[in-house]
Structures are given as structure tokens and as C-alpha cells.
Length: 125
Picture 1 (cartoon, rainbow, N blue to C red):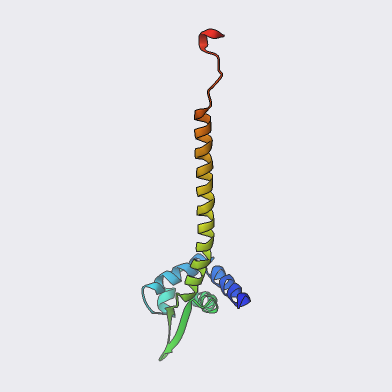
Picture 2 (picture 1 turned 120 degrees about the vertical axis):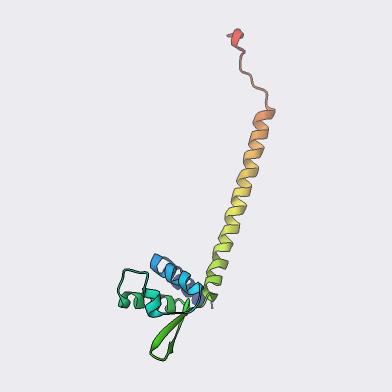
């Protein structure tokens, strides 16, 4: 089970690493689209779009079905939830680290303000 989850996360993050694939997912978040409609805003070939869609499908992020002669794609956001949960774990870790750092700096500031300075006055030099 853990190996499957690790592989799924690897596939999701790999798919999200490309800006074209992220843009495709953003378009699919608005609703189902044909492959041709997805390809319109990009200055790349239809086979290149198909390769991007294959990566997204392998990551479980895109579902594809045929509607007559047209291939339609839809977003499946479930794998994004798993990735979000993974990132959330580390966000909490860093929040805790930053909170501890802030407390340390506050204590250091209080200690430095509480200690008298032994600097000579200007006219005592």
C-alpha cells in the first residue's frame, strides 16, 4: 500500500512539474473538454498535447472517454488531494519550526533587554 501511494505521489508531482500540464488541468477544472479544445491555446502539436494528456492520465488526474468520434477529457482531482495532504504534513512541520524560531528570538530579545550594559558613557572615556 505504501509503495503504491509513493508511486502515485511521484506520478502526480511529475505530472504537475510541467507548466503545459498544469494549464491543461486548469482548463479541465472549468469542465470537460475535447482534446482539440484543450490544444487550442497552446502553440504545440496535437501529438504533443496527447503525450501531455497521457502523462496526466497515468497520474490519475485526467479521465478520457469517447463521445462518438471525439475524445473528451475530464479532471479527476482525487490524486491532487493525496498530494495536498502530503504537502500539508510538511507545511505543519515548517510552521512548527518557524514558531519555535520566533519564540527563541523573543527570548533572546528579552534577555538582551534585561541585561544592563557596561558601556562607558561618552564623557567617561
